[in-house]
Picture 1 (cartoon, chains in turn purple, brown, blue):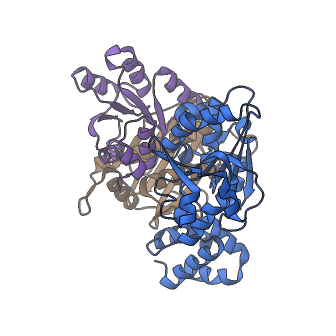
Picture 2 (cartoon, each protein chain N blue to C red):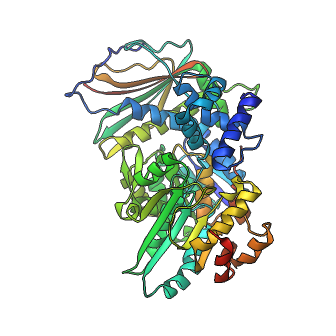
Picture 3 (cartoon, rainbow over the protein chains, first blue to last red):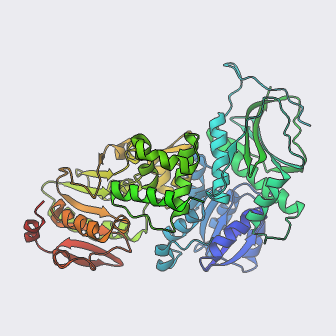
Length: 133
Length: 165
Length: 280
């Protein structure tokens, strides 16, 4: 499984990278929505994108609408990971095509639980709750 | 320099988040990043006292729309560096660079700011963070509406909310 | 760190009051949970533990603090899948006259299990059906939380599908409150699984997940024996993924039949005759 981590903060990308690599995902990173689209257009198409909302150049909401507009990317799972936590924003993101939504701040288990929910984890990883330190 | 005078909230004051809310949001951020071992402890600071650490980092995110306000975090360098090292998984013995700290502290104010925004009337937008080495400076048309002083490993951290006059 | 004698005395207290076993190696957890209580009294940890000997109120708080489990929504996922796919259909058929289901969430903690089941029943029960979920726990503090049905941001992040979050919860300040129509289906009861059981009636499905691991072998066997009359003849008992009836005394392995549903073992009453063996 490949995960693309899209967040303008290196620190947040580092945190997410450690969590998902601990679950045996290969990871790639993008600094904003446009960066992620460019990489995907160049052939780096992940199984799941972990997407921040507030980013420079292109925000995460715009990014998910762009991904959903492209039928070639319909298999890409989209999970928002953002501090945006109003109910209306969660509804908006889901309506635009996000599959899941994690609110920052989160604990590593929150990411593990959601990946399990999306069927992207091996059963053993789910049962063991294998959270990297 | 912090050029503010302490704002005494009264019934007619602009709507502001409660100290409890700001403190809880900040604690959640710390807990999620650093775990249960080293928690934030409340710190008694008289109103109007400038943030008093030697080396200081500050980060600001503003909220605009249904509610207007500015969320600021100030931290002692001795807090900012280990927190940054933890977030970026920098090995012990290696120092976090200033650019690392700016990135990590920016993410702290982003998380706190987004959660504060969700507690206030909306819809509003959260700005990208801006980070400075040094104390936060506020425009004279802003007043402090809420302030939380805490410490981590004995070193000070302050989160405050400013609203337009 | 906690002094070994302080840890030993707290662990003995928890064991005496709840039969739950806190082994060595859990010192850190005990310390993390008790420090805030000690601080609230202005004492250090050892002074606080010494005070427990003669302060029943504080003992109650310690029990509460130490019996809280980290819980997530739809924990482990597969039991919930098995519940909707394989347990509900036969129950819907056999209960078509009464159109009523009763579920027990035993050791419900802060209620995520009970409300996860409620969300599933809300989606999967045909119109005209009723259901009741009885949620029991030893911690009165936890039962208050279940009644309130309010969860922090950190809690709603744990395993709750975002679609369910926006469908069943409303933001109230920093917390998220579960819908009234689900809350009113939950009956909350105070109960120690290791003590005599109050009359709760029989249940169609009993969720006893990740609880038995905290008890010693004798108490475990005793609990499983007393579960028999609590379960309808065609009901299902669910244990945690690391728990089983297989290593139990012969009377229990004979009383419980293990049915594998996908990856989930469900326990069924081997025959209604076992009722007479429980002597409860």
